[in-house]
Image (tube, rainbow, N blue to C red; front, top):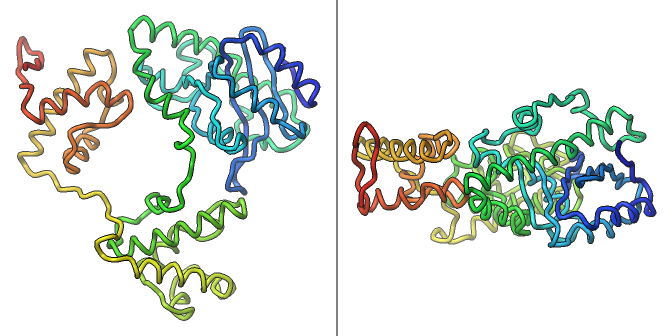
Length: 380
């Protein structure tokens, strides 16, 4: 049984019943196909003895819930929390309901699977097969059927036992501290704050551009982001990545130049030409030494390929010692990229916590790698 919360009075009563909980499980259902920000449609929440679906489309003022969620004494447990936190960051004026525990991340550090889906994790830990028949639901439509609500509530119902199981295993293996950094990042508002001046870095295909063209792309991508945010529509509805790349590459200086770009209609050019051409001009005005630069990568030569082989052996040994698949810590491609970029550390998450120090020590000669009894041994 679960409660359906669709009035302010019911919400107040629910928060009172949940107030003593030391931890809660939390999930959301949302749609974002036609908006810049995800549109929150349903909130599922549970404690050890409470199960409820909250309907934010029916409750005019959700601020009491958002304020309650901010209580730092209460742990919030989610699976694959990033998108849920993006929603609460937006609704909560930049606040994140910390502290957090992400069961997907916890499963990874326990060697259960990287980026493991919720249904698979529930099956692996609890032996429960979840119904997937409502996965394509339009959560903005009302009324929601009983089947839809049962599907939704399962996302927090079983998450309680998943959390308890993972927490027990983490404590037993001494890996709880591995999660501190990734959970801190999830709870950092900066993780969800979009800087229009850096969104160019996520434009697909930018590797074909030269530095001056990247400066133009930066201006165009920032303009698109600000316009999408203002109108609350998907950025692709403003201009596609392909058109941004063509503008940056071709550097048009007139409406006639814009007409040479495939995919732009005369109507679009009439509306946007002045702003687009201004972006191009600003990008061209950036001094060459101030233009954006893509990370420099050097192709591995034969000797560096041997170094990659050495790090692969070290990685496999660290993985074996910790009972984790080496592929979950890093792939060969990731090791090669690290070397190509001149880095000695892998990442700043739990994977890096496992291997960063040993990689640095091996690459700087502080540690030697030997084989003893058919085992890789690190010696200082």
